[in-house]
Length: 190
Image (cartoon, rainbow, N blue to C red; front, side, top):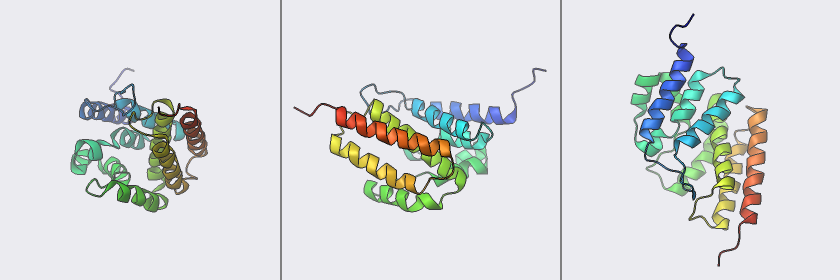
């Protein structure tokens, strides 16, 4: 019977549409300047695979995880549109942009062990995607030392996130190794 899409699928697709519209003009910082939505789709895919596709709210949160920080969307709008559970998950992984960047990074390390299991899974998937991007298409203005420092910091954050998904733990380790190998292989600046 071909009725309307099941609610979980509709929720995830609605989150994808919302995120795509909100991040329309945002690009990644690499040479390819990929549409930012590619990052969101990768994080959602990692979350979906880690949960066996059984947590549509978490997949929706993965698609929306940067709309508060990067696009100024209010958590109240996320709650009204996608429900309190999705809004709570997004809030768990959202940095306070009023703080200095170094303080935000420090707080990610401090807060990581205290996230819910689902929040940890989302945060770890985001770190995996970021490290893969660093390896494949690093920000054009990052020197090797900054990229190496990013990997070290990501490992500090991930240390507080491990244990929620063996597959994501392994993906993180592989992504961190690949990022360091890619950084080491970059030609020295002239």
